[in-house]
Image (cartoon, rainbow, N blue to C red; front, side, top):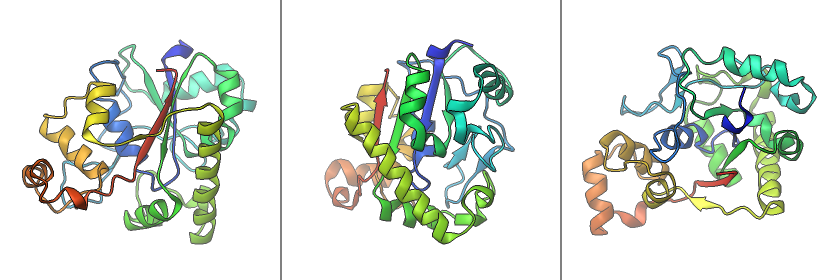
Length: 242
């Protein structure tokens, strides 16, 4: 497996990491492989059925793939590669986004072992993650299921705080830039077509606009200024290797 095509992707629960991963995968600058997408690998909690908030493969304890990926630095590389390949139904040779919450804890060790791979970290403040994750369904989320890894509310809250702390430590130690997730970032850095109506829906959600708004109305409200102060702009992304 070409290690340069692996993207170790992490973020605490509630960081909107899944939506970030989906939008980035629409990049025209980089070719991403979404061959892990499938109808039985989806979860949606929005009123808008177009906004599938969880999509594709997830790795980590209790998740469909990579049950030992919380100890990635200890696994033989061939086991890691086999597990990643098993999550892809089809392959196109593009970059594979490997989503795992627990990567947060061991990012320095993973980076040392895979220095030629790429890294994406999503970040929201603790309170926003906690409110967002429980608001999205919490332990009632059907895909992926969180109960095995995070057990209960108290454990989840502490895990979010710990994962966020480790993500920030890695970001600061490597002097990475935290980019706010807005239309300009996705368009300018990733060359995502933000005029595409579905892409724009995801972007507006990541900007923190109320999702009951029709995209056309929200877009008009943002560009005219009537609704722009409602944007939370509280989701951030750092990258390494791109």
